[in-house]
Length: 314
Image (cartoon, helix red, strand yellow):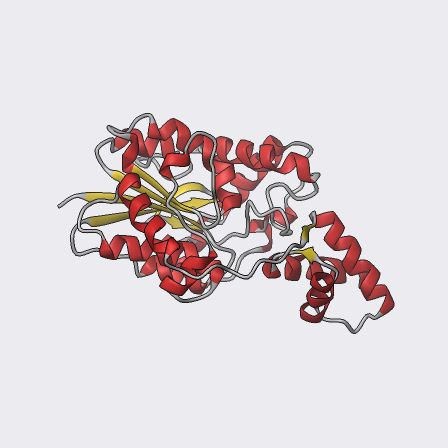
């Protein structure tokens, strides 16, 4: 039976407690490389706490990943982890908190300006991909994974933030495949990707009507649909035809002409409002922001709200 490599991302939600020294927010460093070296030492010291990857993560995103299946081919699941790099479903790792999302305290780019974060995330991923750790017989990069299995189809399921961090690795990897069409990428809302446009599966918020569930787990829900409905290992061109047609059959989304804000602009808005009324909570505050015709995703706003309230409360 054929095997398909499915690559997903890690998630902030964990089923196990995380030691303070394994939270990236607690790792200082004058440079990204120095910080990463210290980080890796901390993870190594906590080897006694290791759990199987499949059991570590929690939440809707991970529940969908755990339910991936197919009657027509086998599936080998890999995870792009901001803490460990590329790991497999059955690897064992210490619980940790690290992310490529720039609006989180455990972000690899925490403290950097918005225009520096993309390069920092790419550098972090590239450096982590060279860390052998205890994964002696595992490919540590997506390029190495695709080079090891050039005849397999590869399905990458990732948010735009994670995809931008790993894109150079993906681009290097697709060159190793027997046919570039063997690579398909599910990333809701992505219209282009640095030379990999032909590998993107058409998907945006309209697909929610097809997959059901929350928008934040749309990528993994669509991936599950692809895997369960495909009679052959997925190919980008086939999926493009199928899902472009399916998208056209869905009703158009209501459009809001709101101005997107940077993290710093959102923080400034929250500080101003809380100084006027400290009883405000994040949901009504987000509504106020949107009433001013400004845009911020709900999860991102909640994270920035918590960050600002901690700052104001000392």
